[in-house]
Image: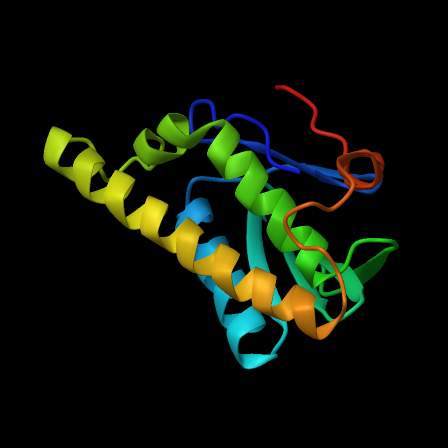
Length: 164
């Protein structure tokens, strides 16, 4: 779903959708907070994806995940349905990808450059992951789904990480 963040532009891939997403939002924190709140309060999760020339919003609730794409030059929207990826799957993939490149996500945000910034981000990101995992497990229990042991082959067939 998320590639290793390099020079502020990680690659986001889900289904057949692929985008280079910008550092203009703090992706690991913004997206994890959205997942945590969605899982905690049973509301939709939404992620903002800023890429040059287009703005995208990924939204997921229950069993449905969609990407809304708006071209910056036009006032028209495109809706992509992502099948076989629900909110729990999406949360699991996000956590897995952030953990895989944890130190890169700690240091990737351009406005945070000091050792103190990195130490604070490391602690806060680790705590946010743990908290989100707790809500994900609780939500999985409500849906009789194993959140932390989801078949990774199934998930990776839905989202292919493409290195930049």
